[in-house]
Amino acid sequence: MLYSKTAKYAVLALAEVALCPPERPVSTKQIAASASVPYPLLAKIVGQLRRAGLVNAERGKHGGILLARPAKEITIQDVVIAMDGPDVLNDCPLFLTPCNCEKECSLHPLWRPARDAVVRFFENSTLQDVANARQGMQKVSVG
Image (cartoon, rainbow, N blue to C red; front, side, top):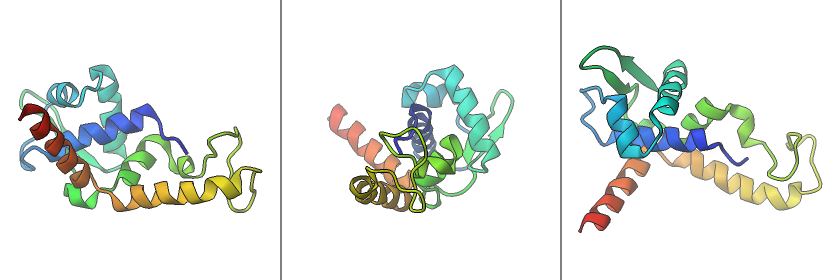
């Protein structure tokens, strides 16, 4: 259950959107620059996030993306599943076949507690939490 780099970029990009005023679309170029996400990849990410119902996209000169719900209502798990699919939460880090409680691999007893902790973190952490943490990091690095 090691989520993809694309999912990581999606979380960082949406955290940047969460730091902006919620009533005004944020340009994808601005998001790409502030989140350090390659622009062509961000365009694909936004499409997946839109299809998952996490963002609304507006075209045109003053277009961009808006969160579909408040940042405090979107969990990291929502974003990871939108990018990597629901099976990512059951993937075993060392075996190629999915590992779950019904069909346990030999590593399952060791991996399960760590997996459960990561899933709890994903379920309980929101984009607002990530945005607040990123904003705190920016203040420390500037000050």
